[in-house]
Length: 424
Image 1 (cartoon, one colour):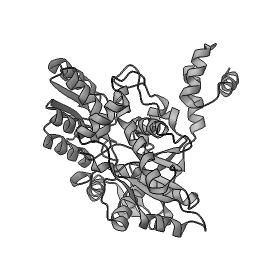
Image 2: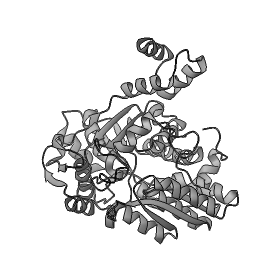
Image 3: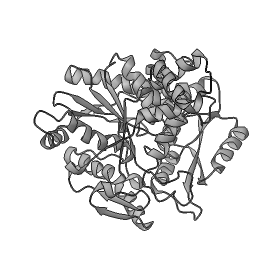
Image 4: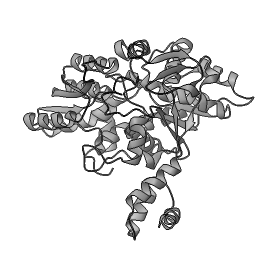
């Protein structure tokens, strides 16, 4: 991460000048009261919400796009291009508009029947409203070919999500969380709950939290459970209600972070996570309604993945602790949970109230009946780290390899050596 051509002062100056960052950290008194009512005596941490929907493009991805587009402008490129079906497209389009650059966004939108996912169609609308040209594709490997062809034909700058400057842009988010939490409470947050997909959110936020001096703040990743659904499957494409912040990205990017469009991915979530939990689709939809009806804040479901997890995690902690929900995203049209649930029903997914333990991704969406029914399920990070290490270190690795793996996983060199001897 020492390679981005921006100083910390540059980052903050560029973001301030382009309507990025400085988003409010909101107290959630009603949800905090609800959590304490459900918790045992003396428990129920205070909940704070970093309202990233206040960025110009409506999500934290504005931070990731800010430096990529600024670099394209500095280097004299006529435009920028990004392959994304998520909020990053609107973020790149928004920043390109401010810098006076042309913009192309390449999206996977449809299955082979030409049916478009409503959340992605809404993001198409947002990108076009911000002046971008949107290239819509069916799900599959053609995305990569189309992206490379457009780069070759246009000579535009590739605004990759996974370059060091993209992750550096997210560091301001973690830094602001610590600054604002200290101002509100007089102490560092006990935990920051981060929606996890490709790892940039976790990596950038954690580095910002540590840059601010909050060494003891726990970083907890949260993803929607989509086990059993293949992200590149035509059959499965429209059988899920979340296009990001889910395990279809979250787990592979922990295990194989470098299968991206740059030689080395700057997003290293396995290095930074202290805990990783999953929630069900119905639990996130339920949390979305709680935020709206208890706090009067309507936000998009995908950004509320961390909220759903935080409502459970806060119950586990003493009442003098603070848990920060790290992001929100804008909502509207296809991003609304009502649109998502309607689309699920039309695709044969059963939507009902009940026990989240009965959830089967691609078959049903089970919505909890009360806040006390919300749960999280822990993923064994140590097992993932062991698998990661053993898959990469052959026989007789050099000391430098062992040290890198120790840094990458947070596991002592001695423990890695024991794993290798056990696998021999």
